[in-house]
Length: 353
Ligand code: GDP
Image 1 (tube, rainbow, N blue to C red):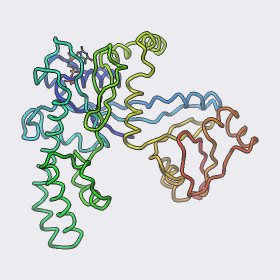
Image 2: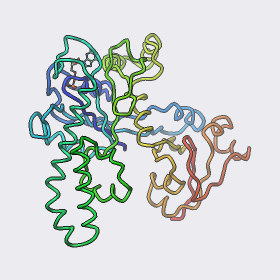
Image 3: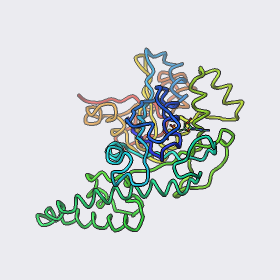
Image 4: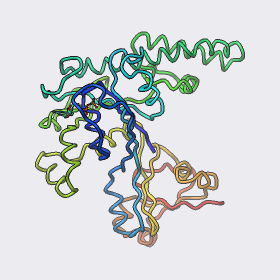
């Protein structure tokens, strides 16, 4: 499943938020380094369309898409130099698909701020600098080896050239992802697992009254406003009470749904469905994926032996009462290998074994 690393300065509300979103129970204490061990929580991607499909097919089970959150221990200025939690922290984010930074916007004077003032921009800069320094360290260690490879062949020489170019950009204070590398260049340094090459998103942990406030952009992106406090309260309630509480607060969508929507947008992901009597299930694919690639998410055999995909739009599937209804109404399409899957498509693959 999609994996997102949660980072941020100490005391910004990472653990509180992580705990609320994953409802796992954990430690949130009012001092830096409360979260020393990375915690992994798997959450179901909230999607009301699954329930609508299940109401038609009455499947034995409903299987939502999942996202894995990795709660990573606090980062302080100097982490890349081995201060704070340093390298252990860095190893854990290397494996994630994206990095989500929690930024403190809430003002509660009872909660100590590591830099002694609430200043989102400065906090974001601190983390950015740490990630850049960590990548410079990675490059510095890799370059002697890359120089050897460069003497061996052209591919090695290219890799060294790109590594040097990236180091130059990092030294100027830019993240690797924003250097405008070509597809070939990015591929050449992929195995270095640079942290600043990962897509980055921001959660603003706001005061309880500010969840609907539109925030200014940070680093070219609008942060997703979430109140860790509200999420913590919501996580204690059953679904019905939570809904009522959200209505009282004027919140349309829970923090998890908002966060995942933003992550899907950032990463260019969407969902399609399979549905029948055994299960109704959501699958995550890149926007623009063609039918065989979508089938391959279920099983590589489906991709290899792909013949066609019987496809209905979500709206047709629901309004026409499922696959049989769509077929009768001529709304069940036979799509081939060049079909670009649309968000919400309900698909049934035919393949050779
Ligand atoms: P972490 O170090 O980033 O993981 O931060 P924690 O989740 O441990 O939170 C640090 C402190 O801030 C705890 O005392 C939390 O109760 C408090 N806190 C977290 N989120 C909020 C919030 O949204 N509002 C307020 N007032 N306090 C919060």
